[in-house]
Amino acid sequence: MDVMRVGISAALGLLATFGLVMLMYTLIDSGSKELDEGPTIKIPDFLHVDRDVSENVKKTEVEKPEDPETPPPDIPEENLEFEVPDNVVSMAAPKVGGGMKVGLGSFSRDSDYIPVYVPQPQYPRRAQTRGKEGYAVIEVIITSTGGVRDPIMIEEYPEGWGFGRAAVKAALKLKYNPRVVDGVGQEVTGVLYKFTFQMAK
Image (cartoon, rainbow, N blue to C red; front, side):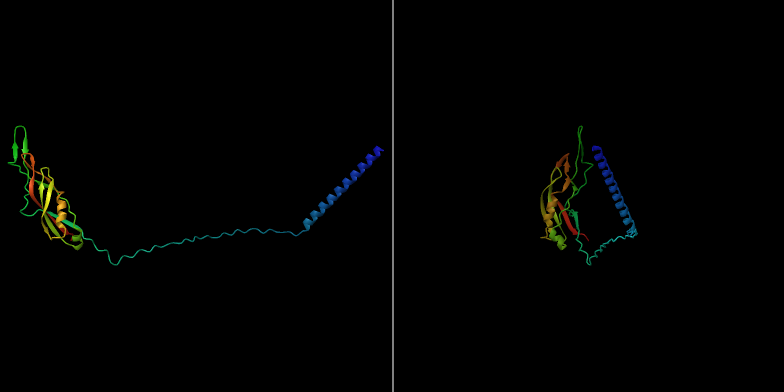
């Protein structure tokens, strides 16, 4: 009984397996035929077209400014002259001959005062804007070291335009080689100096 039952089970298994194989084959064969018989779809080729690319550059032109019709007025330049009034200040050259004194083992030399630096005074603003010219005479004391002190205005022309005040300030900056007598610097009083104020032509 057991042997017959096993044989029947094996026969039924083989029959079922054979049926499944035949069914799978039929399905695969029919699917492939349907695919072959379907319409063919053609994928179009992509066409590459070369295009010229042009730059779009915006150029900005700067207009040249026009020249002004009327040029700005010229500002007159200052032209300052410094003069010593005639017959007022004696600008003697250093004494060479009789001024040399020779002692025992030493010597000394006499010399008169000589200007070594003349400052430029500030042109008065009101006179400059009005085109006024003038001069001022200043009296100073030359010290034993060549400096200047106690400036005094002696003369101003024309008056009331600030020439004298500007000349006094400039006179304080005058520098001299002092007067030397027997090798010693001497103070000199009553020295006059003239500052002339002129506009540039």
